[in-house]
Length: 452
Ligand code: FES
Ligand SMILES: [Fe+2]
Image (cartoon, rainbow, N blue to C red; front, side):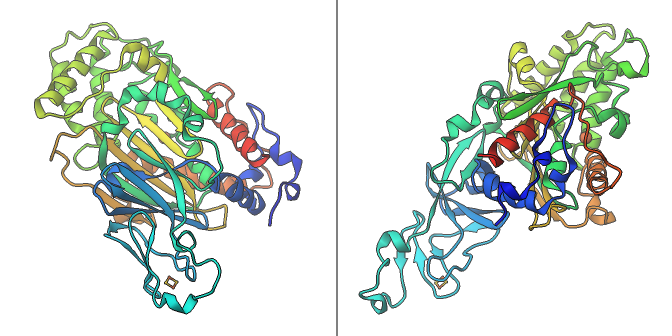
């Protein structure tokens, strides 16, 4: 078993402007992450809506472990290790509905609380040790909920969830993530380390190089920072939203309202599904754009944003959808993007959020799954149907169509970065100490876990 001593000290040397690349390609490092992070940390297993009715279950696989989340009662979400205590068969896969757990090997059974309700021919064990009810029940896993997410921790003696999640709720609760439900949920196989994929959504420094179509309507220069073990990034809004990036060396035009409307349109076309639903609802985009049509072109920032938000809220009220209304101060404090350690990336918008969750795939550090979820503030029956897809080859023309075009730009980078990590010519990664500070902080926190 890999221990800290098997990994050279140089791999733990992190500065705000330096990360050793071996952390992304070393099998020993990945093995240590498995035991010290994935077997310990609070992590998102599913959304509460995945287990909305009693008996609904959702399986969460992480490294060599598997957990079943189940709704055992109206207000009772539980989780169990996905293993039969008889001879170790994995019990369930995917998602579905049950009224009891049943092992497909020798038909042992458990109720939704995990209590054993059948050991076939139990009398055969008469006189044997370790056949008490607590020995043949399912092994419970700790659960917690926040923001509509179900978190699990495989460490029965680990820290409390409240201690772990601090200070995320105080900054992010104003977005009311718990009122959002799925628009779509993709899982993409990527040939990259899970950290490369997760870090792709921890900074906006890449917008100039990766998403150049955005810079005509947004001054994308920003800053990121650690927030305890978590992190966020945020804009300064030194130029109004809708104005071109300062890097284009163009003055702020008198009319930024038109640019803001075009900025919203790019969310519809590039981050949304075929109905325009992605980081925010298509309904809100259209309502805002309609209101902006009649706004005087020289309306100052942020008045035209306020007008757009009021139009979105009015439309949401009309259709009966929730719509968060954080104060200007709450918005400024929240920023635009969070990473809840280790792998819950939240890319926020007015009435929705894109969620990025990268997970190791197998023992090879060069592979991961990237879950990309869109959750939105829907009215009842407004969602045209949740599209769920597992994309095992995102370069395949048919499968690629399921991924919003802006995110295709990101997946391309992710795999090229992983290839570069192996280069003999790479002397280490040099993150921007201002705009990519969240990433170096992320690695410092990883060290904290690995060196415990
Ligand atoms: S392994 Fe499950 S009942 Fe035998
Ligand atoms: Fe991106």
